[in-house]
Amino acid sequence: MRILVHWLINAVAVYATAHLLDGIHIRSFGTAILVALVLGLINAIVRPVLVFFSIPFIIVTLGLFLFVINALLLQFAASVVGGLTIDGFWWAVAGSLLISVIAWTISTVFNF
Image 1: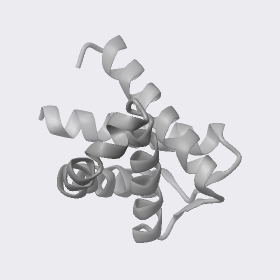
Image 2 (image 1 turned 135 degrees about the horizontal axis):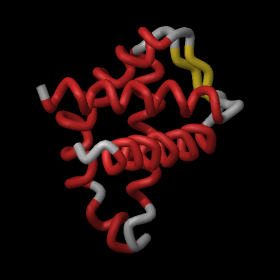
Image 3 (image 1 turned 45 degrees about the horizontal axis):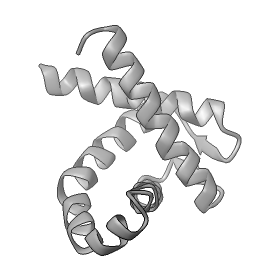
Image 4 (image 1 turned 180 degrees about the vertical axis):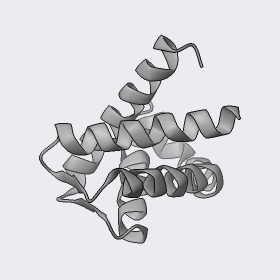
């Protein structure tokens, strides 16, 4: 049950981000649910591998390279899911940051 709640929170965060940022476009809330699922799978499978092989860059940039990884994974999710489009890399950076902040805020407010 807890996984479903986090999935729904991430879907709301993706949907809200698409409406708050001009460079991210989403077709519907159903698409946001699919994007949240794809992002969850990508973050569980691909992200650890990328982080492991990027450790030198992460250390040199004092962790800022993680923003690049998150943006690339968001763009990858957009390429997999047809109803999400991102206008450029910097929109992906802003989108990944905003998705994280919104999801964290909702989780904190509702104590999940």
